[in-house]
Image 1 (cartoon, chains in turn yellow, orange):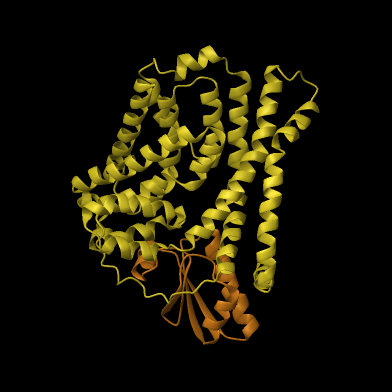
Image 2 (cartoon, each protein chain N blue to C red):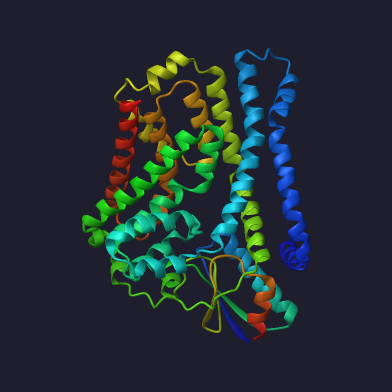
Length: 352
Length: 78
């Protein structure tokens, strides 16, 4: 018997009142910790034998302030999102989308992409499930783009670390790219570029799952389970991202940043996309880098393009989808989404 | 003798589900034949979109995560 089994049976036995009392207490502790971040980081920084205004001092200050801040935010956002998403499921989303006209389907799919829980390990069965239920390919793509692109973790961290204006711009344009790219892909008649077996597949009717009635405590448990799983999986990327952010913040001279990522150089936007695609991390890992880049005067359009391509276009995801899509279709998909990201990048470099 | 199928491409949660099924069956003294379905096509054909999914004697009972231990006991002893 594994320890985990004992754990889940034991957890099941926790009485409900523990949750109702525990949740406000946990929220209170969270709030207290979050408000102690500045004194805490100043105290930790003062323990290092370096001048606070030196390059190394600046980098250390960035790191010790951002690590607890991002981890606290990540925990809070993942919990709330996990609870909210317990009202959604891929099966329900499929039923909603399958009944819709194509045109309304795109924004709706993008919206549901944000709220439907799914991990990239099940994107292949999900893809097949959607397409075989008669949901148009383009609508399915809108769903798949929006999920990572405008995920709550990315938006929440952007809001807390960079500010509401940029978070709002990101939300509006990320959502638009998911909708429009899905629409464009849908117009291209790409069904013939699916792998042969997917086209021939006539998957059975949607599984008739008994509606599992969840209590509020069940939903809170799902949220906690999500925290355990996601924070346990991404903490390393968070530390790595903050480390890179700290190095940029402490050591990269501003005039160099302006030359490479400023709005003047026309090539900076495509370069940001090319660098961003193979970078495999998640929103929580990339936003501290974004924070440091913007702080050093990088142009907003270039930075947005970088962030979007890191989060929304990832090579591992493409390799998973290779099971159902031909190389040609993957190439077209990448090109259309990248075009949307480039357009966003150039637009903001131009108007700001 | 129950036939249980665990649908999933082999992620961590799928393995946790398989272990949970075996442990629960052992605890209840029920004989089970556990089969892991890892092929994306077969998973989709069974109507599962979020993994891990679980079927008992050919009937899909759960999808989208490690099942709750108490509910699993009900499904196995039904």
